[in-house]
Amino acid sequence: MATLSPTQLLPLSPPIHTSNSRHAHLSFQSLNPNPRIFSFNSSVSNFSPLPAVLSSSPITTESDSDIDDVTLRRICEPHVPDHILCRMEELGYVAPTPVQRQALPTLFSGRDCILHAQTGSGKTLTYLLLIFAVVKTQRSAVQALIVVPTRELGMQVTRVARMLAAKPKEGELEQKACTVMALLDGGMLTRHKSWLKAEPPTIVVATIGSLCQMLEKHIIKLESMRVLVIDEVDFMFGSKQVSSLRKLLTSYSSINSRQTVFASASIPQHRRFLHDCIQQKWTKNDAIHIHVNPVQPMPLCLHHRFVISGKNRRHETLLSLLKSDALQSGIIFVGEQSEKSKKAGNAPPPTLLVDFLKASYQGCSDILLLEEDMNFNSRAASLSELRQGSSYLLVSTDIAARGVDLPDTTHIYNFDLPRTAVDYLHRAGRTGRKPFSDKKCTVTNIIMSEERFVLQKYENELMFNCEELIV
Ligand SMILES: Nc1ncnc2c1ncn2[C@@H]1O[C@H](COP(=O)(O)OP(=O)(O)OP(=O)(O)O)[C@@H](O)[C@H]1O
Image (cartoon, rainbow, N blue to C red; front, top):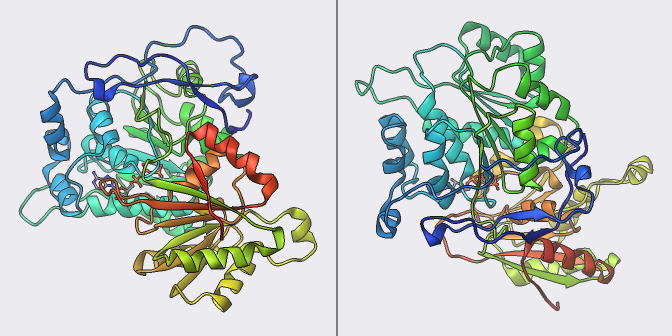
């Protein structure tokens, strides 16, 4: 199984026809000269003609004005219980985002789906609403499983699911409240064991490592699972845990008894992935790829800049950017420490940067660190502190690049360039996360002159423009 890498994207075919021109789609295909390298299933060597279900068609046949007025409630009724819809509205989810408008009717029809839409477009609420439509809280069994790549993303998805699942008001319904368990690496598995034995939760949000431990010991059972979601699917298939993921998709439950949803903002070679999903029986034959806004992989509200800086001046460059941006809240992405540097006993670069900022930057009350080597409690504490603070500066490795939702983030700084275009897309997507806001957010790259061509390559692949800033 090969890992997924950045691929060049190019408009390939003419728009796939839709009955409504506003939903017209273009398909993209990787230009990678050796497609097997990036395959989700390198064993599939001969391509049969691609299945006819490759791209989404418009789900609705309503007129333009109806579409403009449509509410999430209208799309979800009668599938999602009313108390969940009320809670959803209390939380401020009233109008659907494009992915919700396009995907929910298909999801409610029971089809397996690859949910492919920009960062910050509302994919989490989309699959959670499907789950709430399907599960029956009277049954005492795990009925929905959401698999995520990191503990941080798992905590966030659990938080949203629990907010939506808040107990029905007294007398309103005889229903039991829906329970949500977070089964995440670094958690207390003994506590979870007792919970699973006493009364299985309705929804489980899990990282694959912890989940497999529970599955192998038969502590968690998935026979009653009706919905399986794999979030950040391209990352999951490119990770070391791919064999566990394949096993989960094929051995612990049957595609016929569950609905399978794969979600991500980046699915390189998505046509091939859909093909492999069907061939490998990870999904049913009529699985659909719903690709929202394929001509624009990067959210339009982002303004991209770059600053050329000498290697030894990057801390000062960052400091002067922070001062001139007068930012409210931002994330600074730093590359991982090399093995050589670790062996030499050097402090990790994110730690050094936090120390530098604490000593020299007064513009932000909270300067926090998030990196893989921190213990799980400190990682959790960093994120929950951020969610409470009104102004923050988070210094992080790519651990915060996928899925983490901090809607108040207005600025992203790439102190080190990401390794791939896909990584750039996800880092940049940690800002501009208020679906109905037209506020511009900024992504700034601090680069050395010899890195300009790398950034240019990302601009071409992801179809955005980066403006030079002289500081
Ligand atoms: N219908 C809606 N109305 C208002 N806000 C919404 C709606 N749906 C989602 N949001 C908000 O949009 C933000 C982004 O949503 P979400 O985290 O689901 O994005 P995503 O598509 O999963 O992004 P990523 O690919 O980066 O993980 C969240 O803060 C969420 O609360």
